[in-house]
Amino acid sequence: MDIEKLIKDKGMRLTKQRKILAETLVNEGHPISAEEIFDLIKDKINIDLSTVYRNLNTLEENEILLKTTNVDGISYYQVNNENHKHFITCTICNKKFILDNCPIHPIEEKIQEDTGFIINGHNFEFTGICPDCQKKIK
Image 1 (tube, rainbow, N blue to C red):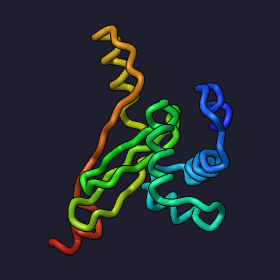
Image 2 (cartoon, helix red, strand yellow):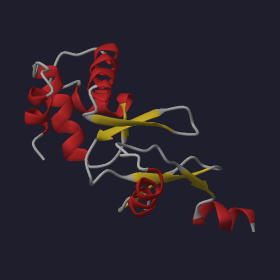
Image 3 (cartoon, rainbow, N blue to C red):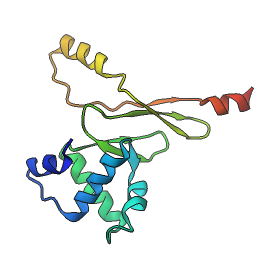
């Protein structure tokens, strides 16, 4: 996916900051927080954390990114495409495990069929107790 083209197609300027942000999200390939993005790019470009947040919000508002706020209150960002990821969070240790495939797509198709809606996104979160924490409670 050419995220740079997507940004331009939305009528947005492709600033150096947006380009590096977008490249980082594509390279990571899974949801990451603004702080994680900042840590990954701060040595490549002179940027403040507030600028990272501002650019992420703009990209999300233009439907280029998906934003998910987890039970821990932290927002995670990823590229908005058919290969987006969901994760399951352990409610004890807060570890996140990435699900390789979106389990929601078949449900979306059924909902569209039943309601006539064209679904253009979803926000879904799984929580549970990870295998390591299960061992500790036994």
